[in-house]
Picture (cartoon, one colour):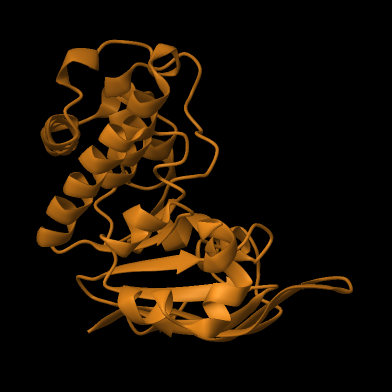
Length: 249
């Protein structure tokens, strides 16, 4: 089964073509990477998938449903969660509160505006599962924004996990991390994948990407220039010229 399909998607900002005729798929239970130079259109791609932007052309299909024109909240409730390149945590919330606030709330609009104390047993169980999975138990009652950078990254990912997504979008998850922290996250992503979660990630850390992803898409100047297994992409002359050769140097 395919979780996500992009069909000839383009995004223009006036005369600027941020994305042009991009097609890709994310099969169920796979880890897919999107790589390319800065300015290649990678984050724009995530913004289209999550409804922050509207495509200028093409279709975004989630589990067989055309979501191209859907608002962000509806896409999120349909099973897409996201983290950001720049960490976005609430200034005054503890780690535990972050794990409750992202969860979809049943019962209509009136319940969506209730404080975090609304959480029922199921919501708390999901939060507890994410807390333990990411090894955040000792930080449960700590204000998240006061924690070290690597731990804040984990809080953001744990918060996304509590929404019970079928697809998680990760925008440069190991940016700013040392090798030990990156290795720890790689192991966690493999475990998430073993749970059946599909992952689409943007990353510039090539050793991390090459040892994590099942399939890669390469963007350059808003266009898809290559795709394939990490081994195939690593040896593609077009990719070496546009991106990997520069990175290696």
